[in-house]
Every structure is written in structure tokens, then in C-alpha cells.
Image (cartoon, rainbow, N blue to C red; front, side):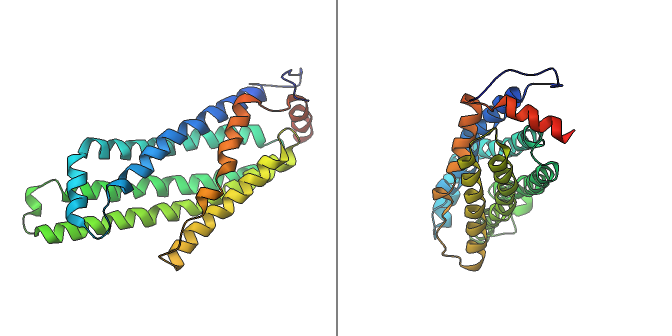
Length: 241
């Protein structure tokens, strides 16, 4: 039975507050991430750089907005993992630290990867220093940077998978959250890893993360609606002091 009561041993915000904030931040990344990471691929026409360039040039503002959206996701990620650290630390501090480290490694990779999209915009800007390149050369470089952006996302995806493993373990062992959520998060970890390494080893590999991401959907919804068993959290917090 969940309890929202705090005891006199609790110092600082209630774990319920951490749970609600984490749930909000996690769910906030859904629209930001969808637009930030799905909009650009929708403009790319495989094997047709001319059409791809036309799509990007006619959607310049939205293209830039998608970059900002993707960068915002990573800022939210940093705040999210710190909140989750406070929530899950009583279970096992070392595993909670691994969770933070993995995410904080993946975040700058994902942010730096957006430079490839800025490069695309520069190539299509018509700047004077590009006059020495033919249209065909500009388009070839544009497609190269778009491909590098895709590959960079899979590199970051390795760490976005790895952080789910300690988080899933902590949720599974916590006692104040449903164990099934922990199992789903760990499955999500392997989904990211299989996708990233599968793409690197087999370019025609079909992604499976669309079938393994449910933990990242149900976990924040649970945090936002149900919260945690505060009494059990308090017991673990006292033991870890």
C-alpha cells in the first residue's frame, strides 16, 4: 500500500516530490524528443540529395527548431538524472552513481552531434566562402553530415541504453516501486544497445527499440500518478545514512 506520509526522519523534499518532478521531466522529453529527433529524418529523401536539400531549405525555421528541441532534451536529461539520483540513492548509492555517469557521458555526445545539422545549414546557406564548390559537391557534403548525425545518435544511444540498466536494477530492488517497471527498463537498455551495435555492424539492421521502450513510458507515468511507497523509501533512507 502506498503512503504519502513522511516521517520526522525525512530531511528535504518528500520522495513523492522527487517522483512527481521526475515523472514530469521524463514525459516532457517525449514531445521534445519526438520533434527533435524525428523531424529531420522526415525531410531526408533516400538517394535524392536535391529533394532533401529542397525540403530543408523550405523548412529552415522548423529545422532549426528541431535542433533546439534536441538540445533541450539533453538539458532536461541532466536535471532528470539528478532528481532520479535523489529518489533512488537509498536503494544503492553506487548503482545510482553509475546511472548518473552513463547519462552524463551520453548527453554531451548527443549535444555535440547537433553540430552536424548546423553544418548542413551552413552548406545550404549560400555563403560566399562556398562559391568554390559545385551544387553537386554541396549536396554530397550535406548528405555526409546528415549521415554522420544519424551515426552520432547511435553512439549516444549506447549510453542512453546503459543508464537504463542501473536505473532498472534500482527500481527492481527498491521495494517502493513495482518490480515490473525495473524489468521493462532493463529490457529497454538492451534495446538501445542492440540497435546501436546492430547498426554499426550491419547497416541494413532494423531497429527494435520501438518494441523495447515501454519501460520509459510506463515508468514516468507511474511516478507522476502513483508516486512511491514513502514508508518503504524512508526505511531504506534510514539504513543508507
